[in-house]
Image 1 (spheres, rainbow, N blue to C red):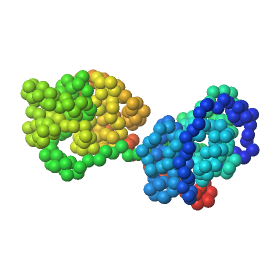
Image 2 (image 1 turned 90 degrees about the vertical axis):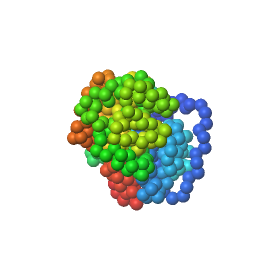
Image 3 (image 1 turned 180 degrees about the vertical axis):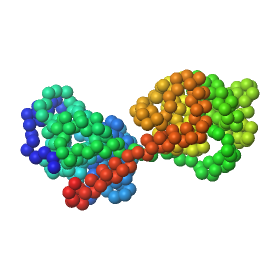
Image 4 (image 1 turned 135 degrees about the horizontal axis):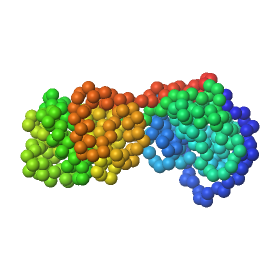
Length: 396
């Protein structure tokens, strides 16, 4: 059931004596009438919490407040979380009067949690990881007391659950549910163009080299040449990182004897085309047409710039180099599920591409990638059920 309201401790007293930063927070947006669901979304919890907010707004018509860093694109109301001091959290809760608070990740904000519990606001922790308090200091018993205020704690995995049990979460309040759903990474496309190109490609095998840096062009071309020995009708769709590079790249390849078509010049690939150079404005189209995708910038560039979940959501098997850029966590999840294959050199790229020309191998890897991109819908649905129970006055 959670902790009783009288849990103000020595640890919390010491915590509240901390020095409050200078400055004044901006005024919050007005509170609409009716119920308000408050979602606190620090760090990695932001994406799944935004998806939860979207679904609550679309399916239940409730007002959702998201506290986070920055200003993400969302239909929810957004503001930074209040400073975790009694005066600030009291003003925040006086203004918003949330009916339920859904807090993501393992971050604990003791002053806020204590005040919310004192006001009988139901607290849920989702995407829960090992708990931590952001402020430095020794606050005896404060982690356990803060965790005790949550009616339900949904852990992302068993390792997180062990850390939460060790910190004091007991009984059926703790559930290992896995990750919540994230916003779909699927990019839009023009179906008319997809159908026409798919008919043009017919039964030809196709692979996509996406966002290719100049330093990677030679490796991609070499890999294509090697793969053509295994599948002589193979077509490469190549997206240079710099669109202005398309003409020079086409001319260089044609000088080496390649048969090239450029989409920028309204050239359509035919049965003899070996490389189709296209722009980066239609990735939703290229991912749908190519069963295998190499994500550029990850081999010889300064790091991958494309979100690999875009590729995974379209069911394209993923090849990447050792430089994930900003997408290290996503690549790690895909690699752990054998949904992405890492290559360390141009020679590795050629070999991996050759392996994935087998439709069965490409399909297995693509299916695993799609599973990672689409996982978590059931967990998000469970969280929504808990929120609905609170709003309806039912027991959790």
